[in-house]
Amino acid sequence: MSSSMTESEFTGRMRLVAFLHDLINNLCRFFLVIMVFSVSYVVFGRFVLNKTPGWGEELGLFCMIWFSLLSVSMAFIDKSHLKMSIMEMMLKGRRIILIDLTIYLVVVGFSLFMLIYGIKVTILTWPTQMPGMQVSRGLLYMSVPVSGFFNTLILLLMRKEYLW
Picture 1 (cartoon, one colour):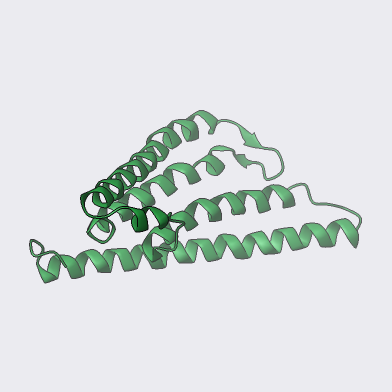
Picture 2 (picture 1 turned 90 degrees about the vertical axis):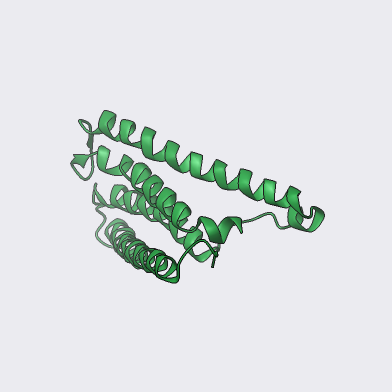
C-alpha cells in the first residue's frame, strides 16, 4: 500500500475491484453456459433432428465474443494475463520501471480506444440485424466498448499494483 493512500481508500478501491471481479465473472459464466447450450443444441439438431436451428451458431458466436472480451478484464484483475518476464530478468532498475509504465500506458490507451471507437461501431451497426437471432448487430459490437470500459476502469483502479 502506498504511503500517500489511506487504508480506507485502499480498502474501498479493492472492494470496488472485488465487486467488478464478481460482476464480470458472473457475466462470463452466463455467456459460457448459454454458449455451451446453444452449440450443444445445434449439434443435437444437426445430427439427431436433421434440422439445424438458424439462430444456434450465431448465438454461440455471440456468446463467445462477449465471453472472450470480458475475460480480458478478469485476467487484469487476477494478473493471469500473458507477460514477457524475460525483459524483467534482463533489465534492472529504472529501465524496467520505464518499460512497465510504457506497457501500462499502451494497454490503458488501447482500452480507451476500444471504448471510444467501440461506441462508434456499435452506433453504426445498430440498425442492422443479425439474420439468425433477429436482434441488432449493435448488441454484438457493444461487447467492444463494454470490455474497453471495464479494462480501463480496472487498470486505473489497480495502477499501484501494476506500476509499483
